[in-house]
Image (cartoon, rainbow, N blue to C red; front, side):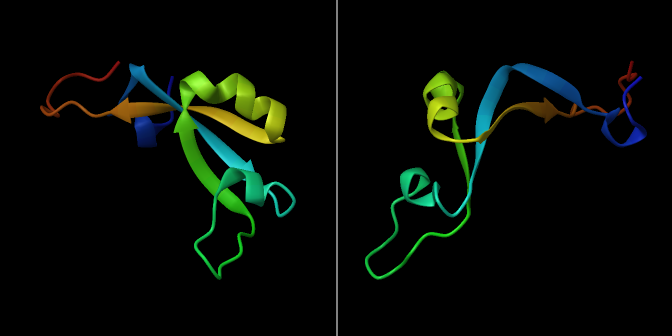
Length: 78
């Protein structure tokens, strides 16, 4: 059974995406800074279609699922 905090939510099978946690050494490849700025550790979202390429470039890549909550909260939760 799901933890009580997420029971009202259901996973969306259509909406997956990727989180990339880039450390200081990887940050320049993860984000392009504005002129005059540097990039340190970075947390970015990416398309699931890019997961394989991102795993080759970064150490910490995670697939995430979006959860949705029914508009009618009277709907029974499994």
